[in-house]
Image (cartoon, rainbow, N blue to C red; front, side, top):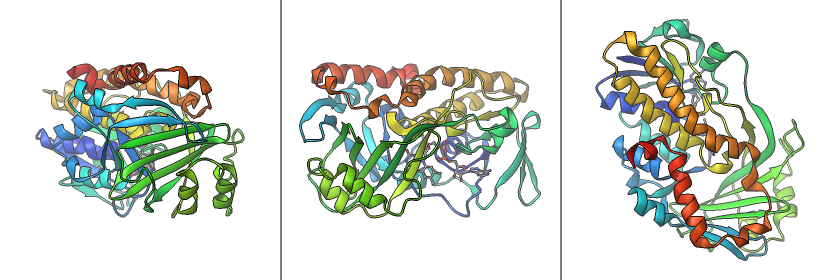
Length: 373
Ligand SMILES: Cc1cc2nc3c(=O)[nH]c(=O)nc-3n(C[C@H](O)[C@H](O)[C@H](O)COP(=O)(O)OP(=O)(O)OC[C@H]3O[C@@H](n4cnc5c(N)ncnc54)[C@H](O)[C@@H]3O)c2cc1C
């Protein structure tokens, strides 16, 4: 089988890697002139670290294993602690936090990618993609792993299904030591002014982000040169380590949150989608990269199991139905942005119950774990 994969992000690279490992051909076309290593860092739950192990990606070299996920008040009181080692014991794989740059570099090892090759148009019925230089490439399968603004999805669905959720994120890394930098704790601080998240990403880095509600349809503060000042005004009175982070923010990335409804099937004939192109969601459930890896894993298996090209359409629709059922769960919750909301009642949840609920939830959000355990 030969797959044409559009996009060298998490979904496209993991898929190509899985296909090549199984003895298939995968051609990856990426519009950027080189691997896109921008962005912050991502939490990979046990289903994803298991998938990385199946892909023989040496994840031990990168990121930081997390042991707890805590919720704090803005004045520095701990509300609840989720023990992530419980899920690690239950599923046999850890939760890790890794810089997006390191994740894509890891996945790209051994994957032939044609860079500087934007796909301008796709012909889904023929598994064909037309590149900006005029060439047409064709496979037995065409996969749009080209992210939120997917060209392949446009050829399948028309238009852009996503809308702004009304929340935005500012994020970056600090390398200045804080009480959390060298730890294995992720900390979420939801308050009335927004949410601050802090997660150690390995190599002395701490990912920080601030989620703030913005005016509907208009990303609040976008392009505002005074964003540092505005964040300091808003969050500067919070307990440490927030003020230290605000003093040492370094480069700042801006992300407006998008959401969309996810159809039961998202492809046509020999063409399908994987990752954000099929299911963009706000980052609040920390699921974007995880669901991209889950798509790639199941899709590589579905293509790998094919005996003839006559079965392609049926197999791809089965993949889409299976994934749609699972990915809708985190997408639905992420779309409400509920995890950003200030909820004092959260302190009423005992740690053991929160840990049990989280361990069960991770399985419900993972096709890999649902299949394997
Ligand atoms: C530069 C960048 C930084 C990011 N930073 C963060 C972050 O800090 N935090 C976070 O939660 N999420 C971030 N994301 C999103 C996160 O990576 C995705 O939500 C998740 O990993 C799903 O990945 P994906 O492979 O489906 O999509 P993406 O990671 O968006 O990858 C899609 C790839 O397709 C390529 N592409 C797009 N259109 C075309 C085309 N027409 N032809 C060829 N190639 C095309 C893009 O250049 C990109 O490399 C970032 C994405 C990118 C691209």
